Image 1 (cartoon, rainbow, N blue to C red):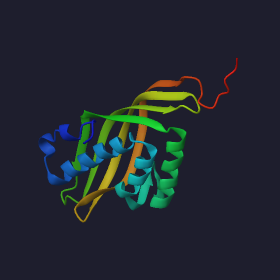
Image 2 (image 1 turned 45 degrees about the vertical axis):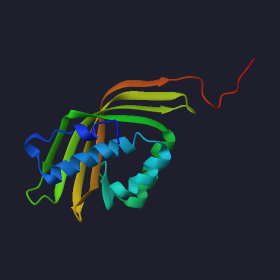
Image 3 (image 1 turned 30 degrees about the vertical axis):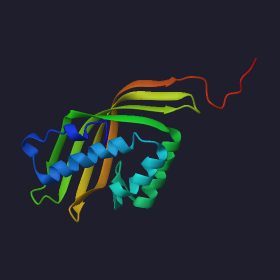
Image 4 (image 1 turned 45 degrees about the horizontal axis):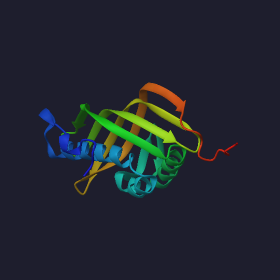
Length: 162
């Protein structure tokens, strides 16, 4: 279904059901964040536990949804492509918790602001399994290479002058 790698995940030595499920969730998460805002925001609650540690800050799912909504309003057009060769997954022996780390390439654009940002970042998702399904309990990311924020075509709301 997705263009960005869900069927290409190579588990190697971590070929366990929890690790595979965690990696699929990480790829799906990046793909949903590349989707139109209405799909992204509709899917977001399904990825997260009721309480989440987001960039070191504990917050409720509702507070996280508000944070994510602000981000989508700032950057309405996004494309996140996981670099599958960088994906690392560690799971507890119990199989009830996993951490997935992966680099991804990103492009985010805001036509109304006339801005675009591109680069590479690293994402780390902590997951717990609830009824056999992974849910995100922590998320951190950081940009490791930015090609910069640049101006794109004339702002959509700019007045045309003769």
